[in-house]
Image (cartoon, rainbow, N blue to C red; front, side, top):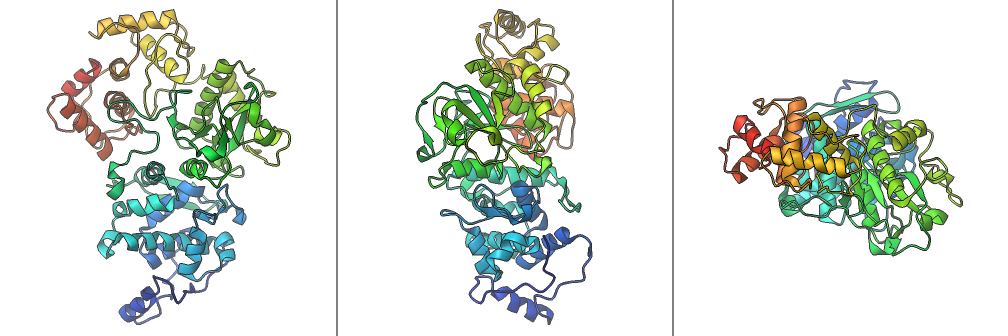
Length: 528
């Protein structure tokens, strides 16, 4: 909710208190005097513009942080899972106190920072600026969104550096890709796409939590190969099980993806779930092994596996098709692995577990569509080909990546049979035939080289910075498999894709020009 139209108050002891005096000397008028209002009917846009100007935070970066935290929905001042408030998710818990810091820096009462959207946005800007000051960013640095990367990583509140980087990377993905969001009041807030070069600082040597190392090995789930593995703190779950696994429980995080993973790592949270699914692209992170008891549904903990979905129950914008498909594939895998019936008696919402007082996943969760995906898969829709990593597949493997391999084999004339996600004799025979055709070792196992050849198969268009479309996605998928690291698969050939092409060319002894031409495609299609 918006209430304030008066000048912002300042705490006399604020580390930023000198800004007011400096502005008075520079302009001859009080620093709090607002400029002419260009958008009197756009209070959130106005709040972001004023906060960005007041604390010299790039406006689009400030919006991207808010969008990553809450989709610009303050939820009427209701707290998140981590006791965070408002559009900027100002937090007050034993390990992270940005709400109190914002109150100190702005002079705003904590109650207003919780419920008044304009005050909350100002508080978020103040906290970010204080982190920038501690980093030593000068005025020129502050104008460059890329220079704020360590401050953004810190804002997420993760103690673990890998999780902090996961948070910051998501913000910079939003900043680079751009977005246009509707607020609960119907106001549109837009960030246009831009090329940004984040200055990682101390995070340059840190891999995002759960990401594979350059060798192709890393912290990936052994229970569900497409997922990252980022363990919850040992004080937030119980080792082992006291009952067989018979149910899947669907949750909504009431917070962001990286923030929820970080919360499970916090020893004071006393909560965890087995898996967390990201809204934007359906990425999955496992935080508790299937064999252990996560603390997510009270009486349901002993016999269930908990799936947390990024978002808030009262905002349907979080429930994307990518999230539904990814979650359904995971649930289908769990049901097949543990013999769980694929019905609404065994796949339930948190609200339906006895002895719980939660309402998630709430009225905006489309159970009909979700259960259709769980039962039938994506039979009438394109097979998912985009993953953050590509695991090794062999006889007995199951899941979404097996479906992807089967689809690609069939598409290239090697009969894998029905695309059912089960790696059986027919799939193995098709893999061996494909490998022989490409001059690879015909062992029937889909490893990094076979994945690279499969994912890159097709035409060889010349692609460079500025290219876009399905061929760029195909290239990005191929590079993800070949390099053993996540290359953003978005169909846009930007600086990150050029870097990946150069790295691939260099590591394969090709001419290094950052352009995917015939030679680069040929190497990829040969599984090099």
